[in-house]
Image (cartoon, rainbow, N blue to C red; front, top):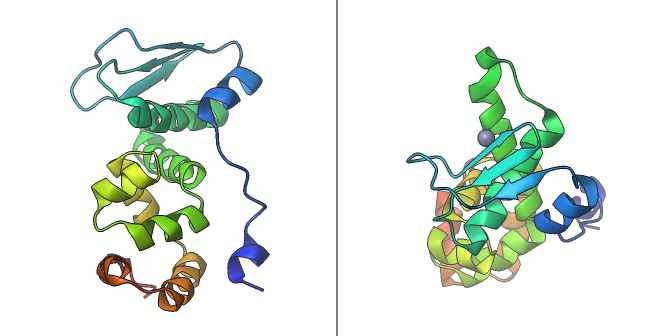
Length: 163
Ligand SMILES: [Zn+2]
């Protein structure tokens, strides 16, 4: 029995747009505006804005991030930076279940390819890799070693250490 099976709930594919419609029907999403540089999404009240320049995978990823904000509520100003990191991590976990990350690592040679394989964006891929838990790293190690190929080797060197 693998570590993952013992520690993670059964994974269901994450569908941010379906989740929006099913669980947050009062929230309106606008893709009509170009947001300030560096801002991909924004949420206030019953509206989520997604920057009009985003591609489909980026919209999906950014919507997931904003939905995590909606679920958690607005953080007080002094906690905003920490909340951003937490929301980023939660969104990355939703978008990239561990078995899919393993599969992506085995078929991709860099973060751009990995993002494309996982139908998400590079930011999400990096957050997911940087916030792997020791158990997840151990599980990936175990399975990458089983089916190691050249691209997986490259990634193995960049994974965070458990120290
Ligand atoms: Zn945010």
